[in-house]
Length: 322
Ligand code: AMP
Ligand code: MN
Ligand code: MN
View 1 (cartoon, rainbow, N blue to C red):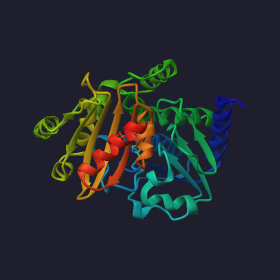
View 2 (cartoon, rainbow, N blue to C red):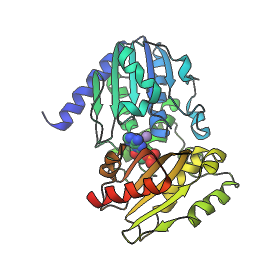
View 3 (cartoon, rainbow, N blue to C red):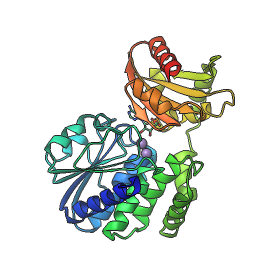
């Protein structure tokens, strides 16, 4: 069977399971982005409208990123502690592996059935129904296929969630293929407003952040190998929204000299979350996987304990062997 046929069969199976489900818990990965939460909420809204009991959750952090809150049109998001212990159907959205579900990964053992929806090439496969399509630009593309297969209407609330994941994971359609552009047109017709969504999701920061950004850029180092890195200290990670902290890597990647960029964010005294981006020659998913994370060839990440210098040394070593 070809890869496409396999994904198609999995989409049909996922639609059959979800079409029957009366109680569904949908999970986004930790530190949720618009693709993870947009996928979970789009599917959650559609299932709720069909009469299912629906919960949407993610394990950490304990607040919903401000820019993603408007996507929860029906108030489906619940705190991890409120998630029912043994859901009838569990859906994992945009998580490249069970560990990306954080503490809520325990539900994989208690749910009667787990549907995994993802597009990371590094995903080893988990769950009873696995819809894994590394060719999809975003997990919302897969969610859209499932909704179409279910015959679920794409209303404005669903369309906004899907558009949010599509526009962010393709960095404003820079990496989108023709089908993704067609999907975008469909979503705009259904009521997603690109200007409003992109402004809040990608193009707005509090003025106070400019000081934090100036610091991050001032600390940036370009090594002869083509590795460009900067560090964001714990004080800044705590002071600014995740939207601001996560956006640093998108500025770094504009350096023409850089082959690989790394934004090294201090999330605890000795714990670092690292975002990697490639200019094209290096597969950073391989690098991130070697360091305990995963992702895509051009965008990947990992979390690692140690000192800042140890984390940087590990990145240099992994780049040498990639
Ligand atoms: P980020 O740098 O956080 O925007 O992540 C870039 C890409 O790598 C996204 O597709 C993430 O889902 C993926 N990613 C980040 N961290 C990890 C991790 N620890 N394990 C697997 N995938 C990751
Ligand atoms: Mn994601
Ligand atoms: Mn994604």
